[in-house]
Length: 152
Image (tube, rainbow, N blue to C red; front, side, top):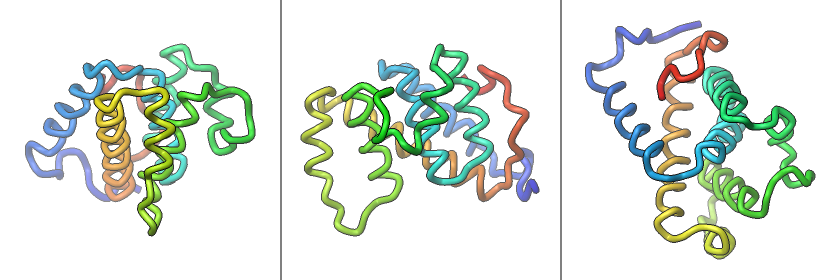
């Protein structure tokens, strides 16, 4: 399954991504929200490696597994706060990038729960999760071996 091994990626690529990830982790964004969004993004993109990682990290951070399992149907449940719902809608829109590119209503909803600085950080976090998904899917990273804290 693995198409490109860690030893075969260009030197500096992985440390650069980890440096950006560390910035996101230290930014003040809620870690449980990060894991919730990363799990949903990984579900959309079909990244098994990232689903394995974010599920384990989220549960370790105290997330309820039912909320993770229910993410594909988040609009139909009462498990998520309005703040989380706004962030999930934003994550889905940025992951799928609709043709119309109209994110005005999403930003209006986000501004009810986040500052503009937090929205900028959410945007970076969502973009980074999508980058990790695309790399792991392309490389054929094998799921199931991730240990909590491995990349924290």
